[in-house]
Length: 174
Image (cartoon, rainbow, N blue to C red; front, side):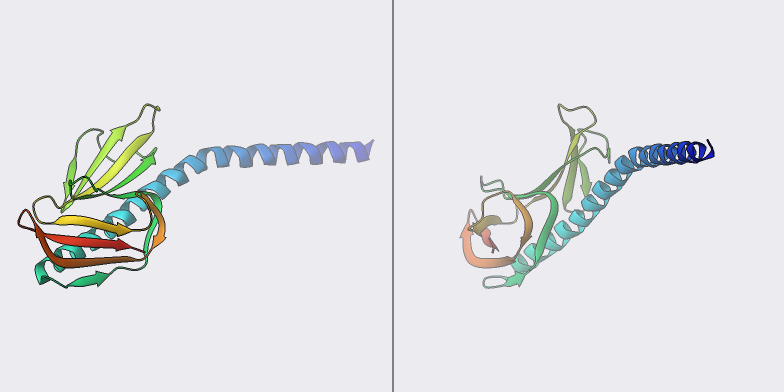
């Protein structure tokens, strides 16, 4: 009879331990995912600031100026280089993190951040935009298609050409 009591106790303690671990994980995983998304957004903002600084420097220095920003890594989300004459570089990420008031654009230096609600409850689309419509014509040179996710080589070059009195800046992704 004593051996049965020991096994029953062992099974009960094991079951209680599994339930406690499951409860801890069910609470902590969403928090970890939200913190991860917040960190990805912060890292991508820094990447966008570096990209913007280099594009503006290449424009300022004139024809032939170029910068190599390899490697460029987009860990999560998608980077778009707008080819429809909007001259924008955009990054988008779906997240559950409510980082700002939805629908209200926030200007942070040269970056415009916008959080939009999606059709899924508590799922948002955050976007970071760099706008060059008044200072340059951005041209994408890449064998890869828009959008970009992953690790790439990136070269920014002032081509010396002008369209509508704005310098043409080639962004080559390799």
